[in-house]
Length: 208
Length: 212
Image 1: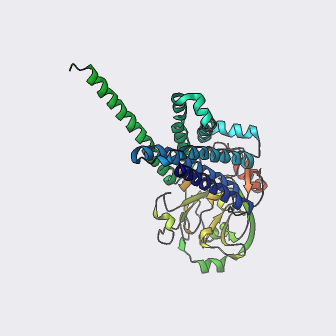
Image 2 (image 1 turned 90 degrees about the vertical axis):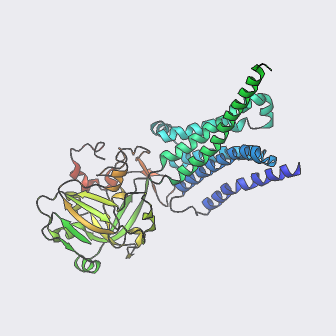
Image 3 (image 1 turned 60 degrees about the vertical axis):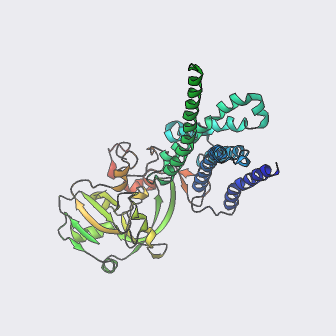
């Protein structure tokens, strides 16, 4: 029991460090020539990293029996949401000057912003329903179905990144490759389960 | 630097000769990046017009094409073809001959450093910064509109004229405001980057949302 808690504390504390560093640097005017732009890019990048980490947990647990990692999935997921919210709030506050009309206009005019907003909007209910209380309320089946929306949020996040870079696709493509592996694992397991279920049904139907 | 094409006196000229013939003047210009940030920069340079008059463009010359250095050893960023190196740009002849258009040889009271486009860099203050081609190795006078790097890469996003225009959005963001580096909050972008009085007449009657 102690070991699980320790891993979680590690993730919780270390997951906070990038935002703390960013805030410290912002306070000390150490974010470079264009601090708003840097803060937007950094929080976005971190959101994607936390999304990848969230999706990494289940494969590692299932493949290597690293059960200590299971509680980390929630930690990483909530951090992904927090960084996405920070990413959007910095854009809204400093790029759009707290102007709601201008923000809505920009989002409606730019496909990559619509896609990014989709990712944000999906992650909010997922973060809210991440508590133990909520898991009980929804029941394991409904909760699992709802939280499969993480896949959509991750795809939306990577697509948002892909559409916004102007020439160098390297970073977005790396995220796309990693995401493909993480989603590919789940798709592979889904096909494997279908096969297993089919075999079982078949053996039940066959005359002995 | 080689100057050729539709000129009466094509030649190759070195930096020392250029500095000797064309004395530096200080030009303090606003610079507006297409991505939405801006600065005020004290350049040192000379009017491009003076160099063009030296080589005497013929009557067929309508455009000026510029080519930058292609040297992946010196410029490691060019080792991958993120853009189609060498970087190329172009101006209409009247834009090139305009008194505001300079070739910069210095910045902030010093010789132009490599990242800013040493030894010679184009500055056209009423256009987006990507028109300011750096480390120019060749200037060619042409009759046809020359290819420019960003326009070739993303034609819907980067035009040939690239005049600063708050009324014409970039497809991915509004150009109505800009972030002046060092200021908090954004400020309104000015038509032609505030040089409308000097250059608007060059584009009279042109639909600037079409010819961006």
